[in-house]
Length: 325
Image 1 (cartoon, one colour):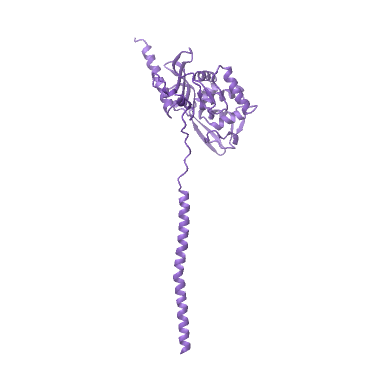
Image 2: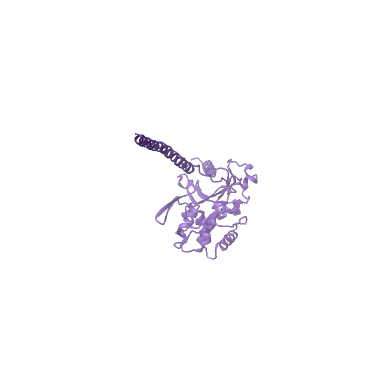
């Protein structure tokens, strides 16, 4: 009887231990699950963390610092510098701070293009984008990745139409004699054509040390306009380049190109914070071939608005001068 009782106690104890173990297991599993869930939540939080915003350059332009925006004009232009000249007669139709020497941003690329065009280098020669072409001045991005190879002619097209900085830099870097020799030739060309207020330090316009005056830029536009290739490339509205197994479509930086109210023969836009919004064009307005220069415009669209003001003003003056029949 004692043996039966002993066995019975042993069985009960065994069942009790099993029950306790089973009761403890869910708690153990629950703890592990909680830890796993917490880890997943942390990972998800890291993934959904707001991206760090790029630093916005809010420095005032050189023109604003110099007080050029305080100078008024009859059209209330937003550009601190403006100059409109008849291409054939050299008559000055409109002038505002036209002797001020300011950064010109990507207007620089017109001079870069002039030198490449003058040299008559093979347009089909392949040029590879390297780390040297990456912008360390402003940290700007580019769709032309390091290692991309394109013909020289394609790089010239992108530099003029889409203001592609790596394309422009690569054109200067691969010029016979190297980049510094190229920059020297840019300054020599400026001197040769009578640009006395102008200085270049690199071929893209990213440096604020690339500077000129509106008077000098009229000369640059007139000189570039004589080259049919530069006229064609700068007024192209879009262009597709094949890069490896895919294609990249680029568009003009000047929205007036597709505006039916405009007849533009050559153009170039530019922007860095020190220069403000810039625009130079050769355009036919009211039957007259005009050179238009706008520097240090205050807002993103203000250079376009200034050009429109000038066009309407010239057209109005033309209508007023035409005798009624």
